[in-house]
Length: 331
Image 1 (cartoon, rainbow, N blue to C red):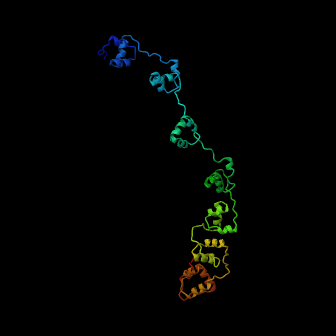
Image 2: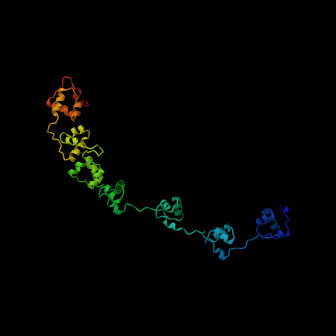
Image 3: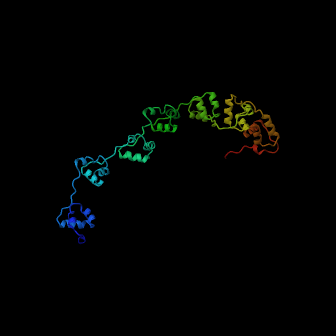
């Protein structure tokens, strides 16, 4: 290819005055042709003059390599090569003011505060070697000392956390629960089941679980929204057994007992006869009405009628009442 290039005196004068590739691009040939011609003529290769004065080297590491290159008119790679040769660390811009927040809270919280993603905050924190935020231990020795000194619900209300969290912490530290039964007055016991446990607990200033425990321990069902007691229903309280009243008014025996106590009505004496005992006897001995029908009509149980009939010698009419017989027990 060298035969195709006319090496005029002006072109030969450029050999060794610039890089071979630069001269090759100028005359329109490849770098090897220029290199071979220069070697044949004994011309040494071009050596770039040292542009790195003391003042220029002082710029290295004070700004980015690209910025130094623009100032000195050099490619960024030459700036990087000189900086690396001198062992100068690359320029790192001063961190913004929010960098001081890193590690003081969770990355996602800092991100929300700054309008950045939690991932970008994590990346900057890890890049700067800032350890991740660790929330302070909630259970300080002072708080741990409270565990077991009162019901978990009370401790939870005091510390502003859930009863479940208090219970877990107490178990973790091997602390037994606090059992201090609440002393209820007779008037308070009479109200159990008549209102929600939470309302009664707030009214009496005690934990809800104490009210629930006192109610369940007395077999009183939890309060449920129900119809109001009428004056006629209340008038029945104490005139017959709670079970009889319950069947008559269509309520539970426990609800009847609780309402009777609430109104200060004493329970019906078991020694007194049922107010409708004569009517029950008349229907049992003179009509063919089934026992369940009679029991429902007078608010008593089937067994009540059968027991009375057995003890008092009542007899049904000629047609036998199949309900008279008690169901046989397991053999």
